[in-house]
Length: 276
Ligand code: NAP
Image (cartoon, rainbow, N blue to C red):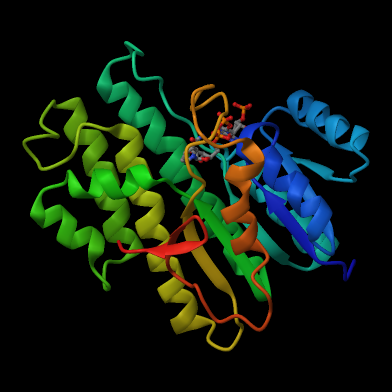
């Protein structure tokens, strides 16, 4: 078993994820895994970084596929005996003018952004080593979507006692409500991406709390963040930040020094803790 520290970035064959891998290859003192659901796209990204003189490793990972997540889990357990840095970056967004029915957009978006990210956490968080760092890439859109929720929902999503099961029930209810076209009547905002990212931010708050309760003394720090508005296939060419600039806050959180005890359980953008 290798004692080398190990970092994994989900959805890192392009965009912000690729920029996070590039930065970690330069700054993280250990093995860095670029992961992709498609091995061809993943290998092409690895080759690109190799041409820049960097040495990322590759593992397949489709966060929609529990078997794929468990294969990575077993690999990490066997080869490294755990995990030091996990960046949950993989995500999807329908384009604004996409004509796919809203209920389908809701189901598909929540499946990857919330349920896929949660499944990765369920399988990989138990592997986190002491002083591990977990970064869940959410979005500022989670904050604006939260403000678009009914007071009752806002209270639930801001609660310091909400459980993961309650959050899953709420995310499931959103998808069901869109199918019945009653989501707005039920207090939801009209954004599937926004609700999926509320899920990611609230999940991060819950997981940080659980780490405090169950793994006190292990110094693991877990945060949600927004990379900013970044020029990628998702956000388009008009966005204000380059992928490298978008990677800065996730990389800052992934590399918080072992002496740090904060931020933890926070929502962070531009390396600054934001109110939730
Ligand atoms: P992007 O260029 O579209 O890249 C998304 C990455 O996620 C791709 O590598 C994609 O792989 C991967 N992915 C999607 N579904 C996956 C799955 N089921 N399993 C594994 N990988 C999957 O988007 P981006 O702008 O870099 O976004 C990265 C993260 O930042 C996302 O979570 C996004 O919501 C968040 N974010 C972005 C912005 C922005 O302005 N760009 C702002 C706020 C937050 P494929 O190539 O196979 O599709």
